[in-house]
Image 1 (tube, helix red, strand yellow):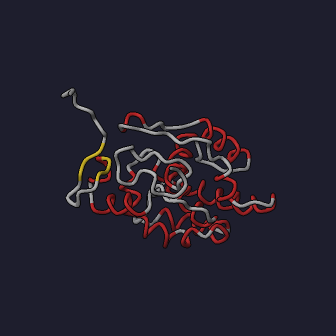
Image 2 (cartoon, rainbow, N blue to C red):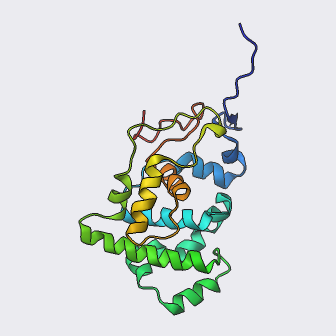
Length: 203
């Protein structure tokens, strides 16, 4: 019998459940990991919110965005695409003055543009959720350790390209892969995690 150490990439929490180390950094992250991350989101409103928050997260920690999510929701009309699409200069000024969110002008303007692009998608007989889910791959990654988790994929590159062609901004391949992970399009839970294959999308 080999005594070689096998790194499963997970840690065991006080509740006896296995998670990646990032999900054990705080109660907030643990709750998010256990109940939200990787669970299917198939409605336009939900996908728009997550696309928006992933863009705001770019270059920052997810914990920062998660802590500010209630304020983000209040500031962006609960991420109702129709409401955000109607935002004007006064709203931009209001958002830039709101210390409860991430006050990045480019990301704020991109979110408004993305709301308008989301509304425009409907004229093609689809909505944002259906469009994003149409890029679901035939297979999902099976990472053993965090280093096995890809940062982008062929599908996220294609999704990024198509969204940009339809007027979306701040939707690069890495950000779109993070979105696909968050809403269950791919399952990148580590194989030894208690959350692996619990979304109902992948076995």
